[in-house]
Each structure stands twice: as C-alpha cells, then as structure tokens.
Amino acid sequence: MAYGCTLRGEHYTFGDLKTLMAKASPARSGDELAGLSASSDAQRIAARYALADLPLSTFLHETLIPYEADDVTRLIMDTYDGQAFSPVASLTVGGFRDWLLSDEATSETLSSIAAGITPEMAAAVSKIMRNQDLMTVSRKIRVITKFRNTIGLEGCLATRLQPNHPTDDLKGIAASTLDGLLRGMGDAVIGINPATDSVSNGLALLEMLDHARQRYDIPTQTCVLTHVTNTIEIMNRGGAVDLVFQSIAGTQKANEGFGVSLGILKEAYEAALALNRGTLGNNVMYFETGQGAALSAEAHHGVDQQTVEARAYAVARAYNPLLVNTVVGFIGPEYLYDGKQIIRAALEDHFCAKLLGVPMGCDACYTNHAEADQDDMDNLMVLLGAAGITFLIGVPGADDIMLNYQSLSFHDLLSLRKLLNLKPAPEFAGWLERMGLYDARHDRVLDIPPGQTLLGQMVR
Image (cartoon, rainbow, N blue to C red; front, side):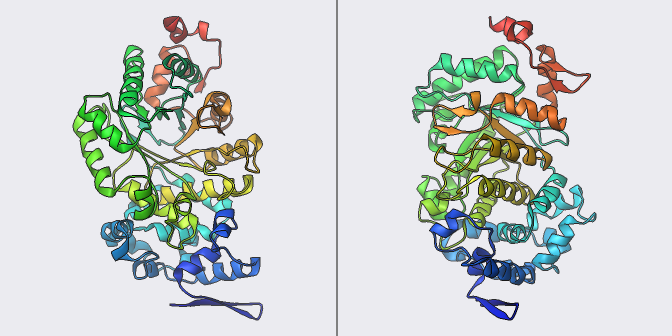
C-alpha cells in the first residue's frame, strides 16, 4: 500500500509503510549507509505529515517484516494486547503524539497501555516528536523492577559500575570496583565485560564479585556480560549468577548473528528464575541493544535502524528484565555520525523502550573516530537524567580501557545526581549511609577520601 503527501504543491509518494517510516526518520548516517534516508529535508517533512495522518492501528495490519519470515515479528504480533490498546485505538500517529503529551496520559495510564503498543507504533510516533517531546513523555513513565534492590523509582538514578580490565586481572577489577563504590556507583549492577569470553573465566569473575558483595553485604546484583550460552553452562556448574546478560536485536536474523534465539533466551530466563537468588524480586535478565546492530549484520530487512532498534525492546519485554540499556554510540559513526545524532538516538531509544514498558538505561558513549566528545556526553547525561532514565553506566575515568571507547565516569554520575537531586536505589542508599558514604539529611552521595569511610577502612 502506497502513502503520500502534497507539500507546497509537490506530491510525495512512499511505496509502502517501511519506506514511509524510513523517510520520516531524523537524518542519521546508518540510514544513509543503507540507502533508506530521505533525499531532502522536504521529503522528510512530507513523510512526517503522511505518517502523522496514519491510523495507529495500521501497524496491526501491515507488518514491516513478514510474520512468516521473522520470529521477532511473530513475538510482537502474538503478544499484542488488544484490550490495553483500546484507549488509543482510534487515534492517528499524530493524535497519539498529542495524547501522550496531554495531562490525560498519566504515569498510571501510560503503564496500562504498554502491552498494547507495538515497537513500530512507538518508533512511528517518536519520528514526529521533538527532543523535548520525547523527554516530557519519558519522564512520566516509571518502570519499576527488583532483584536485591528497587530500580526505577521516581527521583532515583541507578548506575552500572563497569570495572572492565584488558586482561581480566582480578586485582585491577577489584580496585575499579572499590573506586566506583566509593563514588556511590553500582546499584543497578556491578557488571564486567570480560576480555576473555569463556565459561571458566566467567566463573572466576563471578566468584570474585559475589565474594565482595557478600563480604560487604552490598544490596545489589552482579553480572559478567558473557554470551548467554556461557551463562547457562555457568549456572549448570553452580556459578554465582544473579543476572543473565545478552545483546539482542530487532530481527531474527540479527539475533542469529549474535548466536542467540528466543528459545535460548527462554531457557536462560527459566534457569535463572530457578536459582531464586533475588531477595526483593525476580527480574533476572539484563539486555543491551544499539541502533545499527541489525544493519551491521545485514539483517535489517530494509527497515530503518531506529525502528529495528525499537523491535529489540519487544524481545526484551518478553523476559521481564531487571535492566535494559542502549549502548548508543558504541557501534560507531557509520551508524550515528556525531554528537547530535547520538543524543537524538539515545532520547528516541529511551522513549520507545519506556513506552513499551521496558526499564531503560543508557551507556552514553562514543568511539574515538566519531565526531563527538565528552561535552556531548555531558549534555546527553543531563538530558537523560531530566527525562527520567532508569540507569546510566560509569567506567573509571570515562575511558573503557578494555573495550576502547569513551563513556561516563564515576565522578560524572556523582555530579549528575547532585545537579538533578537524584538518589541511588533506596536499599543501596541505606548501605552507602552505613558505610559513611551517604548524607541522608541532604539526600546525596558524599565525595570524600576513601580512608574516611567505613568501607575504605574495611578494605584497607
């Protein structure tokens, strides 16, 4: 089915829904690389007009990737909740935008419709929204998850402490972990990207992290971001697995490129639930995504990269994750060229995931050959903090020396919490106070010498 719009006397035609979505997307290098982006600003605006007039229900009848050819499409369509969709069923994409920004769309109402929103609907409405719109709606949506603490509460910003090391040296990882804990980091997860992705190495890293967590009675969760099949074997061997991690994408073919299927994810999910290691809840999965992953694997089926990314959130949603984050600038400038594109993509990802009921965080990051710098990341972290991001990732000195990319530092996130008056997860804040790292009267993490804290004295 073709779609069209007449703009200033010129008629623009878009051959199908997939084309319309791609042409309406904000400019980004990945869509240009794939030959999908609008050829002019006028064509982009015409596509947005046409998209705004499209009934939201169109996405229930016209799939961008065929049902019979893709298990992610089947997951989306088979789990769609018609009753949850009914309050917005009569709206166009443009009308949906207006409703999302209205006072009628409260936090409770947005949560109630999440199961009825498909990723394509979320992506479509995001394409006709300004950054301010994305932030305003995202801030209203609270997605609360639990394992050993509570993530996603109003007024809280959780953090992932990422103590990566280029040789997985346990002392080096321990030193970075202590550095992060002394800055109030780690309530979302203490998560290591292993330099050597093997079962034996994963077992050793998890044992070290779990020993530290238990010794200091830290109310958080740990994770080694190894491949899901390694984690399944680690669980079979009795390893200390809190969260199961996996990178995921928005098409079956792209997930196959990661060496994973929906069936494998279900097996891991059920195995982690059976361990019953959580004390407050049973959200046991941790997923990472990123715009451009499907295109880089030639698995995007001609769909624009932001829409494919939103489809990954339907995969995540199916397994009730504790955490999901987009590694927004990690794949490189071929997909997000500069700071402006990275910031826009992060706000889109956060909005779409939250609208689908997914607990979304972000690695505000970039590679060294992108047209971006730490000022862009400062801007992004403040925008995401204001938009109610669930968690952000911090690495020592903002420089991941194992993965060779730039992110946020522990001090950056400490500053953001002070700037926006955001707290750690409440259980973690209580632990920080007991360790002499938190000022309960002023609701802030203290930045003081390690030797003056109980934790520093205990470690010494």
